[in-house]
Length: 313
Length: 313
Image 1 (spheres, helix red, strand yellow):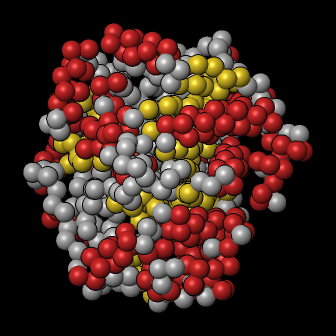
Image 2 (cartoon, rainbow over the protein chains, first blue to last red):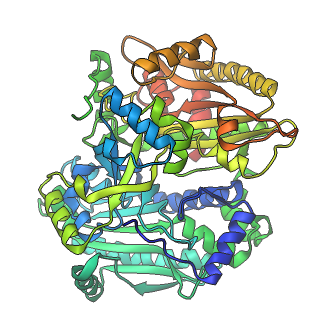
C-alpha cells in the first residue's frame, strides 16, 4: 500500500500555486519534489552563505557530504527503529542481460520492475549531521573544548509526500554540529537557539522558539516523543508560512551521549563526547521570506536584499 | 550477486591515500562515496561559481534540481535500457508496526531488511540535465533561438563502486543545456567544446578533446556505442589524473530529437526541438587541479588561486 499523500490546507494549496505560477518552484509531478527557479535559488544560496559565514566567524570547520549515507551507518544509529516511515534506501540492478531487457520493457510501459532491483550499500541521507560523527571520530580524541562543524546546506530525504509546499521529500538542511564536553554542548545549544531566533527575526520573520519532538513512528514512538519533550532534548524555531500552524524552520537536537557512543567519539580525557546539532531548513526559510515580504525579492526591503540577494550584483 | 568493486591502479591508490591523509576527502567506508574537507569544497565551490558565471554571461537561465528524479520520468527516457547497471532506485517502508520492529531488529544486527522495502515514485538523479527537459517543455513553445539553461552543479548517482578516486558513485555534474533549432544546438556544442577546452587549459591542465561513447550496457550496448561514435554524438574533455589513461572531466552529448520528442519540446514553428548538454565533473576537475598543482591550494599559482580560491578572503 503506497504511502498516502498528505493533503494541503486551502492556504497551503494557494501558496503552492503562486510559487509555481511565479516560476519560483518547478513541478516534478511528484508531491514534495521541486526544482528551484532562479530567484528562489538565489535567495537560498544567499542564506547558505550567510549561515556558513555566521558559523565560520564562531570557529566552525566546514565539511561537506553527499546526499547518500552508507547503509551500515544508518543501521548503527537506530534511525530505522525510530523513523522507518521516513527512510529511503537505494536499490540497483545486478542481473543478467535477459533480465535487463525485461526490466527495460516493463519500465518503458510504466509497469512494476522492482523485482529486478536489489539493495545497495547506501541509503538516502536522513539528516545532514549523520556523516559528521564518524568523520570526527576517525580523527581520534578531541582537543579540549571539542569541535564545531558546519556541514552546510546538504540534501536530505524524508519519504512523506505532501501537497504542502513546506513539506518536501527532499530539501536542504543546513546542519551545524557541536561535539564536546557536556557543559560546552549545552551552552552552545542555548547560545545558538538565541542566535537563530535573532537571525530569523532580523529577516523580518515572526519567529518564536518552542520545545518540540521528532515524528517518531508508531505507539512506541509516542512514548519516545513524550520522553524527548520531558527531557527538553529538541527545540524548534517556528515561523508562520501557510496553513493553520506555524512551521518549524530550524530545529536543535541534543543527543547527549547517543552519537558519541555509537561512533566512539572521545573527549580529551577519554570519556564519551556529547553532541548537539542545529538544522536550518533552507527551503522553509525561503518560503517564510517569500510569504512575509512578497514573491518578488527585488521588491523586498533594501536591508534584507543586501544580505540575501545582492551578492551577484 | 553484489556489483564488484573495481580495483585501482597503483597510481590511483596512491592518490586516494594522499587525498584522505590530507583531509581533502573524507572516507565513508563505501568505495566511491566521500565527504569533502574544507579545502576540497572551497575549490569545488569556486569552480561552480566560475562555470555559472561563464554561462550567465552568455545568456543562460539558472535552474536547480534535487538529486532525485520522478521514476516515471526515468522510465520515459530509456535510461534503464541503456544503463541498467548504473541506475539507482529509491525504496521505502510501507508496512505495519510489527514489520517495522522486525526491520529495525534486522538492521541493528546488519542483516538483510530489503524485503520490507518497496519501490517509491522517485529514483536517484542519473544525469543533471534530465529534469531540465520537462521543465522547459512545460513552458510551452520556445521563442525563436531556443533556450540555454545552467542546471548547476547537481549531485548525480552512478552505481559503479570503484577504488579509483576519480570514479565516484555520487558526484557533482555541472550541466549546461541547450535546447533549440538543430543548427543552433550544433553550433552551441562546437562553441562550448572549444570554450571548455580553453577553460581547462587556462587552469594549467593538460586537456584535450576527443570523440567518445557512453558506457552502454551489454551486447546491444556495444552497437549503441559504435553508432554514437560514428555519428559524433559524444565528445569528452580528457585530462590526466591518475592511472594509465586520461580521465573525462567534461562531456558533451548531442541528443538530436531524443529529449525533444520524449518530452514534447516544441520550437517556435511547432517542430521538435533538438538538444545538447555539456556536463563538467566538478570533483574530477578538482582532482586534476590537485594532481597538477599540488595538494595545497594555498601554494597554487596566484592567478589560479584568484579564480578558484580567494573568494572568501
